[in-house]
Image: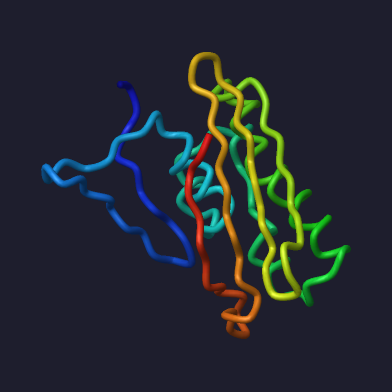
Length: 145
């Protein structure tokens, strides 16, 4: 499989997932790229990117707002913008995002990344009650399909 090591990334932290045989979990690269695009500062990406890939995610800004319908729409738009570079760079044919308020303290964010032979559905559950003033939320997330 072409790609790289899967990193479970969120809020400035990255976890390397190791299987029971001591091998790192591998990926085609879209899961890690999506998480970095959504939740991490853009400096890493802009430092190595071409002009079409330069971006800044507005997700951290949205995470500091009160959770309400307008916040849900802004999160959905910010996610689409943050991952738009994948289509521009040819890494994906299409990226669709959806956000839903699952409870008064939880926003569910989903991204469907269409790539021939390797579709991915990524889901992130953002716990608003666990956030601090900087917008660093508690989380539950994972890839599913």
